[in-house]
Image (cartoon, rainbow, N blue to C red; front, side, top):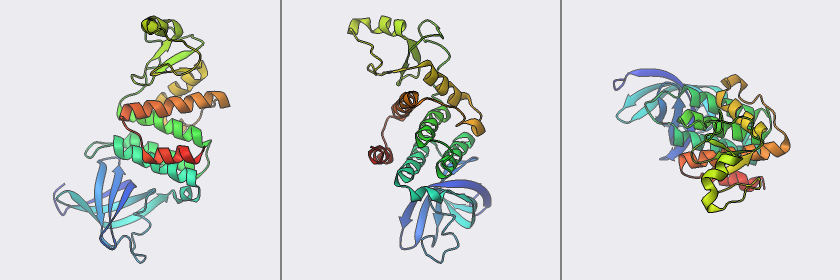
Length: 264
């Protein structure tokens, strides 16, 4: 795109930074160009025609022009806004966490169709109470790993290929499953004890949790939340998803800490 050419593109605002008295610098996730930085003059003014379309959690259609490293807004119309999230503190923190993850895993200049659809579906599920909030969070985290290219390998035990184990041990660093015998074999020198707890970098999960993880990894976007787990299995699914994502990105997130503190 040459400087001063106009481009029409859809995207969701994932970050909004105040600049000067009434301006904003936005980070917008688009399908075609990944994350882009967008400057909006006067966006913070109550009289601005861009007041709604440039808010966090807003999916809008933008008409942009580019100068050097920034895009500048010429027109903006919102398509869908997930503002109901702000009416609940835990949902607000969780929605901000989703955006923070997106800003971490997506880059400029690369297509991000999957990541855009994931965050839109997840925010819609959150705003509309589509299903349990913990399921939405965990599903988002696992699918974000898929979009990063670090999908868990869940077809069978990494050691022996077994698919009928009563307990699987998930490696939250490498994304593999081991059966009890194979994990004991490779860890025997450390004299570990397996008692349905996390063992080092491993989390013990039931076959139902393993099945749910496989479903999330492979499901069509419109079916992403269409699975069920018992309350006990959901606890393991929740722990596995969060720990695996944090290991893959190599950092924690302030908004995640705030969310976990809020729901205690």
